[in-house]
Structures are given as C-alpha cells and as structure tokens.
Image 1 (cartoon, one colour):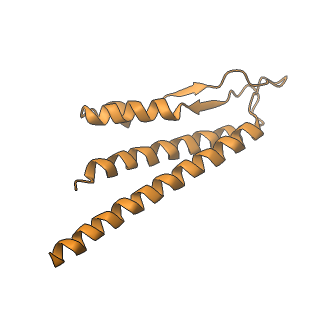
Image 2: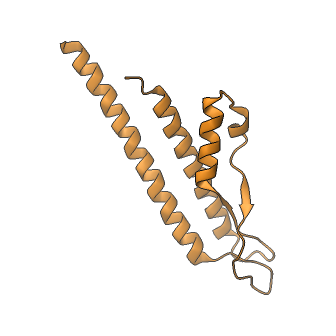
Length: 123
C-alpha cells in the first residue's frame, strides 16, 4: 500500500483548514474595524485546485495560499463593517470539525502503516 499520496492530500486538507481558520479569526478580530469587509476561502474549490496542482506537480500555485474572496450579502453596519459574529462562529465550528476529521484520517493512515510494518515482519 502506498499511502504517501494520501498523506500528502491530507496535509493539503489540513493546511487549507488551518488557513480558513486563520481567515475566520481575522474576521472576528476586525469586528469593530470601520470599513472592514468579511473575507473567506471557498474551501472545496481551493481543495480541488490544490489537489489538481499536486497531481500536475505544480507546487507554486498552492504555495501562494488559497484565494480569499469578500463574502457578499452580509448586513453592513453604518461604519461599513459587515462582520457577523454568528456567521463567523458557525464557520469556525465547521472548520474545526473539518480539521478534526483530517486528523482522524491521518491517524488511520499511520495505523494502517503500522499494521503493514508489524504484519510484514510476521509473514
């Protein structure tokens, strides 16, 4: 079993989850900054882009990080800020669950590797 590509993909998944979490934290930190506009990462699109870059051997596109976009349709306060702590809290919870799922998948990969190593010595 060759799990190196899977571990590489899981690394990309965790990196994107972390970057989205940082973006959400930045939004929350700027809740009182006049004129601040909420930003986000389209997680699924960025994951697809990173996976296709990896499969083509292109590391430069993904090394620049994911593309941030302004979140449209949010209520804007009179000072021009449109950060919604409810939206950001929900997005943060979702991202934390995604990250935890990625960690569990990595643990599973290492468990399978360990099983192959231990099983290979007995055969």
